[in-house]
Structures are given as C-alpha cells and as structure tokens.
Length: 231
Image (cartoon, rainbow, N blue to C red; front, side, top):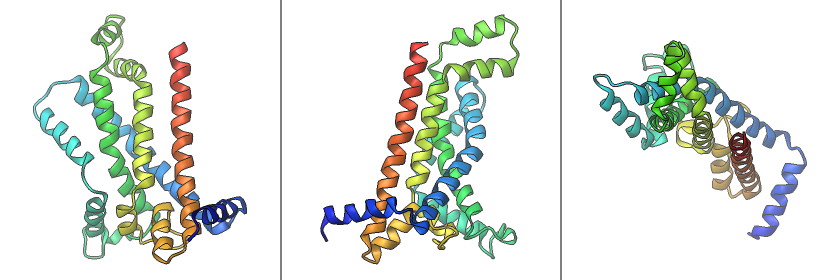
C-alpha cells in the first residue's frame, strides 16, 4: 500500500461528492450534535450546582462524575444494549440499532465531560460575581446565568471536548447502532469496517474529515475566545 497514493485517492473521493461517504459523515455529525443538545443543559446545570452549593452527598456526586469520565465507551454500549434489547426493560421501545439509541449513548458519554469541566469553571469564578449579582437584586436564576456568562468560554470548551469524545468513539456506536449502512453507520464504525476489509481509501477519507472537523471546531473556539478577551 502506497500511503501517498492512497491519501490522494481519499482526497479525490471526498472531492467527488460520493453520496455514501458523505451520508456517513452526515449521520456522524447529526447524531453527535443531537447528543450534545440532549446532554448540555442537564450537565451544565449539574456542574453549576456542584460548583456553587454545599449539600449532603455532593462529594459522592463529584466522585461519580469523575469516575464516569474514565468509563470505557464499550461499557456504556454494553449497558445500553442490555437495557434496550428485547429482554431488557426498555426493549418495547424498539430503539436498539437506531440513531436514537446512538444519540442516547453519546449523550451519556458527553455528560460527565460537560459536568466536570463546568464544575471546574464555576469553582474558579470570583465569588464577588455572585455576591454583586445578589446585592443588585438578582434572584437565584439570574445569579446562575450571570456566573455562567462569566465562564461561557469554559462551557464552550467543554462542549468542544464533549463533541470530540462522541464523534471519535466507536464502542458504544457499534454496540447500540449496529453499523447498519445508510442508517447507523458513522465515521468511526465505517473506518473500522473498511480497514478490516483492507479498503483504506474510504477509511483515510473519513479520517481526514475527523481531523478537519476537530481543527475547525477548535479554531472557531479559539477565535471566539480571542474576540471575547479583546472586549
């Protein structure tokens, strides 16, 4: 296999607008985006609560969130598979091997990253911000929004990290999605399949897309952070 020649062929495949290839890319982006939409609000809220309040069980919740950060994606996939299979408690919903199951799995994977990074960001906020907000008559929700506004770039970075984890994982997507062509086959499962067959052109093309997506998102975040720092 000539690496340069194969890479050139992969670039030509991308440029040609191959429907199968771009369909796989679309499924990945769509599933990851919807997973983030599902996970971000509760994760950010949990991170804010853990970072701002002291209550019984707080330390246990923090340890649990930190433990979930290191949980292998295939374990999440196995648990979801058992829950969504015909013999599982949610088998009647017929979600196994669907995009909806992948969205749920990837939302679970993104949740601890979003919560943990929000927690760290909120803990680093100057307490005078919340004190000033309350002095000016802000209620609890307005105070929370004021503090989250202070850490908005950290929350954006958490979302980028969450997106990076879910778009690059393979274990959960393979187990609950089933790698079904034109339905649940995403970038990572397609790369694994094509490589196992010795077909490297599509695998490299999809790998290039993953790298470009990561670069694009991080560049956009850095640009927004730069503009925010100039204000």
